[in-house]
Image (cartoon, rainbow, N blue to C red):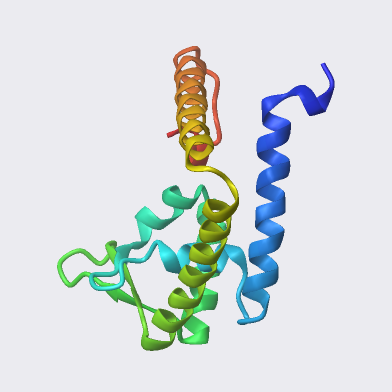
Length: 158
């Protein structure tokens, strides 16, 4: 089968194109796409437990720790350690972090508005349905692999 005929080829090349576009946008604001996604996944009011951020983004724990340290050094986030359980750390946005989060949010909104202006709604509805079906099939396959004792990268298995 030619690569152009496979579903995963189109998902991967599409995602890489989106990633390059987001990184070009983010670079203008001293960010990366990954940093933008981290900022967007931190609750603006309550903060977010550090342990919840990585799985949301499919990030390896080491990469997330490095990124959070970098964001803390830049003054974009701060860590709040739970008084009762020192293992529990909540990540909060600083005022500067909230500004950067808003920039990332605007980039996502601009892209989605461009898509919605150029692709008819009925096609988008079908696209979302197909992606939901693909994700369900992938989850089912991962469940079967786990049941057969095949070890999966934990960031993508759950």
